[in-house]
Length: 83
Image (cartoon, rainbow, N blue to C red; front, side, top):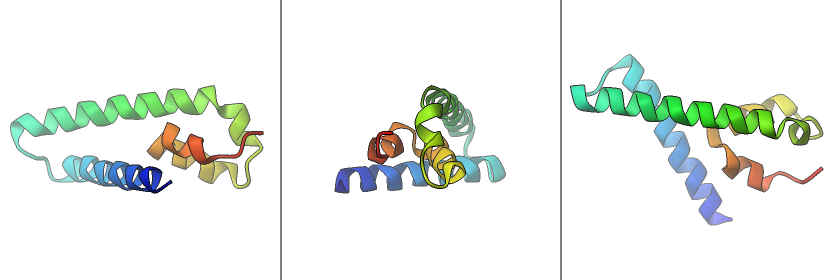
C-alpha cells in the first residue's frame, strides 16, 4: 500500500501544479501542456466516476469518495471496499 500512498501524493502535487498554472501561468511551452494533461485527466476521472457510480453510493460519505475519485481516479477506487 505504500505505493498507492506515494501515487496519491504525486497526483495531489500534480493537481496543485495545475491549479498554480492557472493562477500564475508557466512558460509558454509548459502552460498549454499542463492544462491539456490536467483536462484529459479530469475527463478520465469523470468517466471513472460515472462508471463506478453504483459502487460509490454504498460507501460512507459518498460525496467525499466522489471528490477523491475526481482527484485520484483508479488509485482511490482500488482501496475502496467492494459492495
